[in-house]
Structures are given as C-alpha cells and as structure tokens.
Image (tube, rainbow, N blue to C red; front, side):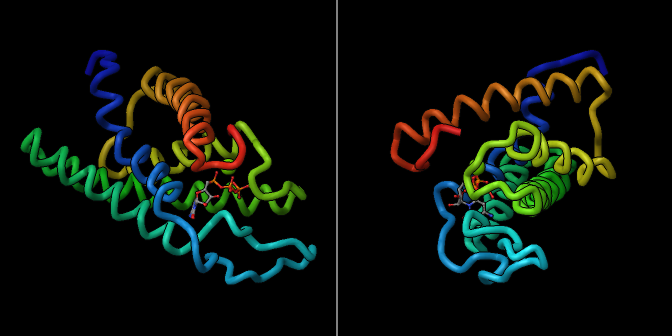
Length: 164
Ligand code: CTP
Ligand code: MG
C-alpha cells in the first residue's frame, strides 16, 4: 500500500482514544494500590488508576468497533482491541520506568509519555497489521505533535494540572 496519511491516522485512532480516555474518566483506586517498589518509590504512582485503565480499553475498543462497521471491515475491531491494550500497557510501563528513574508523577518525559504508548500499541497490533517504516515514522511524529497540543488544551481546560 502506498503511503497514505489518512489511512494511517484511521489505523492509529483506537490507540489515541485509549490514551485520551483516562484523562477524562480516570481517578480513584491506583493500579499499584499505593504499593512501593524496592527503591522506596511508588510502583506506578497515583496517575495510573484502574478506572483510567478500564476507560482506555473500553474507548479504544469502541473506536475499533465503530471503524469496523463504518468501513465494513472486521480487521478494525481486532486492531481496536489490540492497539488499546498495547497503548495502556505502554502508558503503564512508561510510568513504571519514570518512577524507577526517580521522576515524580506528571514530570514530563518525551519518550515515555508521548511515544511509548503508541510504540507499544503498534507492537500489540502487529499480529493484525503494522505500517511500513515510513508509516511508523509518520505516526511517531504525528503523535508527538498531537500529544503536545492535546496536553496544552487539557491543561487550559483544567483537566490537567501541567501543560504536558
Ligand atoms: N490516568 C488514569 N489512569 C491511567 C492513566 C491516566 O487515571 N491508567 C489519568 C490520571 O488522572 C493522570 C492523567 O490521566 O494524572 C494523565 O495521565 P498521564 O499523563 O499518563 O499520567 P501522569 O499523571 O502524568 O503520571 P506519570 O508521571 O506516571 O506519567
Ligand atoms: Mg503525564
């Protein structure tokens, strides 16, 4: 398939919805149940909640279902589930690494905050479909720009304490 930005955006949409949902619906019991790692720091931190995780999986999967009925292609449903599971894993793994590096909750890390979730989403979806190298680079660049933009908006709207 030739390089098709629109097709690539549609493909990665479930990962974006999965990653955005927790900002709106997250909160409550943390995934790590307040537990600490051997270094004395939180395992994941208060920014990773069960409700956030569940909302990400639900919204990412729903996005895939909508796309699959829109384009009459069940591939999108499989991709939706896989991409959102991968996105949530990458987001949580990113926080785990941030805590191990001694970074406070909300402290920014371009790679771990903005690229990890989408990389792991693409990995998890690879059994269904994976873009070529140009497509992957396009998605990483797009994600970087959109993430910066959406965090700025979320901060201005009072949803996020810091603009990153
Ligand atoms: N969120 C959540 N559950 C998740 C992921 C996110 O409840 N699994 C919510 C939290 O309210 C979090 C916000 O979405 O504060 C923004 O998410 P993110 O930027 O990933 O977390 P941070 O608070 O920045 O924490 P960290 O430093 O661990 O990335
Ligand atoms: Mg953050």
